Image 1 (cartoon, rainbow, N blue to C red):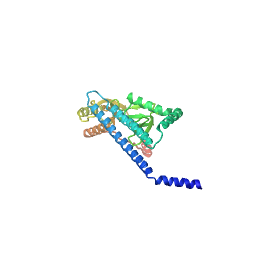
Image 2: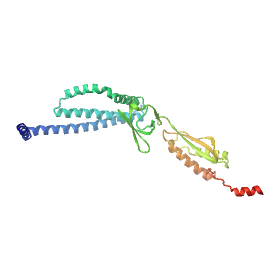
Image 3: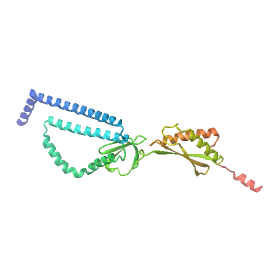
Length: 293
């Protein structure tokens, strides 16, 4: 009981000491200053990196915009990690924590758990290879496994892909084995048009070609004039004709929808019919009566 009372008296005396509050106040102010300075350094560094990349993009040297955007985000993340790590060390030093012993202990601990962090190292190394080999970059439309969408970010450890329906898929870089990149080369819009068997196929072909010739310059995303390949398939109730158009990467969906609309309007104006489902019905009684006659 006397020991507890002595401890309590010492604690009260410690809190009542003016020097104690001066020391803790100075430490608190130092920590706040470290956090503010770290935040400012990160913002300034990111701004400088962004401006450097803008200046580089204006040079005559050909630079891949996709690659530049990926490297920009990667460098900004690296700067943030380094500055915040230094800020944590400074905060611990302000709290009179033995940094040398802590770092030595961290080194021993890191060696001990190194075998358990092989996947982390693999993710980081794979991430660097993805960037420097330019397998895909931020803004590309890719397919990884069953996920398909635009690359939101390539980090040191993970890659984020956002599908067109809004889902965000996050992949560890070390788990990315097969990638299909749709944004490197030009795309091709494929449009199939169904024409009724009763229509003149030769006339329909000439009119479609005439329409495609008139579309030159209408769509900026079309790189080459759309081409009619001819009859693609003979269906149960229609003749399918195929039109293709080379477009900018990932613009084939938009161009395909636009071409279908233009061709539909053009065929309607000419009276060329597109087939629709038909059903033939007969009566057994009429069939039996015709047989008797």
